[in-house]
Image (cartoon, rainbow, N blue to C red):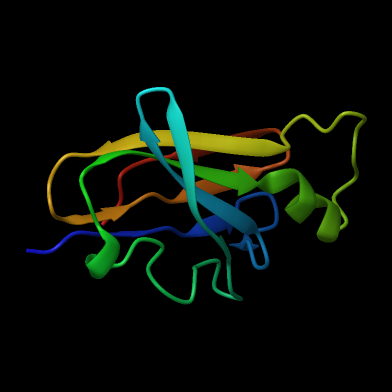
Length: 117
């Protein structure tokens, strides 16, 4: 089996997929953090393609950075100064060539994630 990485963002406060949310992918090697790409969620809260496709997959430590504050601003969610959740980094390891799915369940005051399928 070949590995790849996907995500899905759901706005649990609105009960909708989080469309238009910017996500950055980084590879972590020791103290080095290398940006691999920036993507944006579609109307279904997913990216149009795998974030890390089979051809680019390698085991190791990665970080997805979800730009929740800008998304919440765009949806008209009342803002505090500063916003409680702005940038959400999720650091995780991929130890085998498999499908890794890292979803984000988001609200203005909390979030959760898990290894999905």
